[in-house]
Image (cartoon, rainbow over all chains, first blue to last red; front, side, top):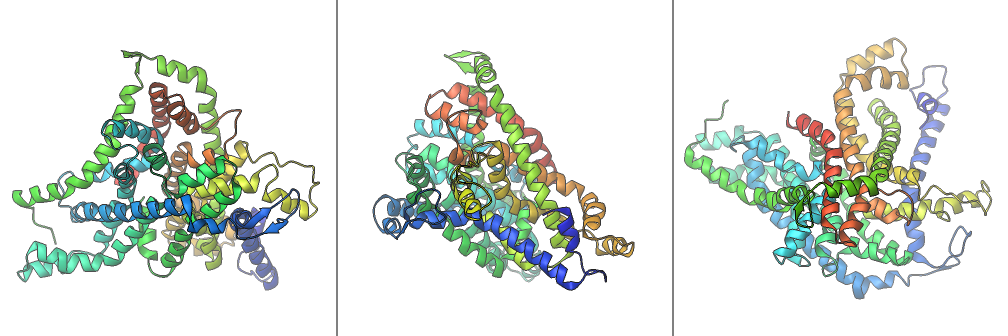
Length: 282
Length: 275
């Protein structure tokens, strides 16, 4: 957006007719649509292009031939494998992250800040060299090329999201209710399961979704630790595009994007506050 | 009310609760990080700086290229992100906000593939421009596989996160300052540059550091868009050195260079976040 365009978008200051402002605003939305949606639209066109010669704007032959591949063969296998890995990763991430996050949020973790910092490392350092090194270790431990190895590497990245969102969530619900319960004679365990956990439920769902999507989309770790034996959709897509199978790669890309789109809608409606709090914190 | 200090038994329990997750990070990230650090100084079983010498000789140019691409991506992201976040702070525009969030949910590999199709010498963008009569069919767009194409793809992916971070910072600026500015006749631009940006300088710096680190370490997008010749992003070199040459030593040295590039940024980032 140019500076001049932004100035034109200022509230009508008397001399600007309202029409001009409305037009400038519409122009901004149109420009953003083109910039944001444009590149993604190319995927949709390629996914149905059965014959496409330059320089035609649209393909000469259009069909769902490549979409039919979703239901069979490698693509379907990669999809199922990826979802399985994502479900296991999410479950493990929640199970292990909830205690850490709760303890950190309530400042009951000795060396809490240091422990929390550990969970920022995978976000602050380049992942590829570390995962390459992990692949060497995993090979030694017979974890390379196995589902367990891929889950472990996904868990490393997933825990960053899980721990930091849930710490924010537990911090946001406040301690008063738990203190009241303890004062009334409830045990710590009872208080945690009956007060803290239910109150944090929406935030836990939010972080579960984030971890699930992260795992589904994870590429670097899967490629280094899992390939060629454990293939998920992102790796499958990369392989397809290497062989210049543009249609297959585009279909895969659209399938990969689907959960994100659903998440976007969900987040808009339900999980907005937690979500923003999380990113502000990162 | 102050929380009473935990008793030793309780403290032990909290420690134990933290063990599984911490162990995963230590085994899956900490140990490999240290291992790559150690391996970068070993070649043919001897402790040496040979790996670094090779990195300097073979990949010196690529290090510079990586920094430049990341810097260009950063400039593009903030060039678009600051006006957009400022505009959204000053005027409600739900459609713009929704559109901006879309890239946040598009996986990196998909961004790489989509941009490669879009910006290719005969890609979607070119055919649209041609159909609109803006360029001749013989023209080549040329920048899809250059530093500019990469920077555009990186900026596209990072814009949403940056706008979200900046909007959070801008929203924390008290309305009264903006009202005062408006009272003196400041328009949208003036309010952004003279009030919002200086008052959120530290958040802006944090967001810049976050984006720069991520762009320096970008792998999937350059991999999807990469080509055979010319300078490469560091992570691509590292991947091929490791995967195809099986040269863990040089790959590790490249990794250490990338840690160093990111560490200034990472240090600032960790310090600000932990405060």
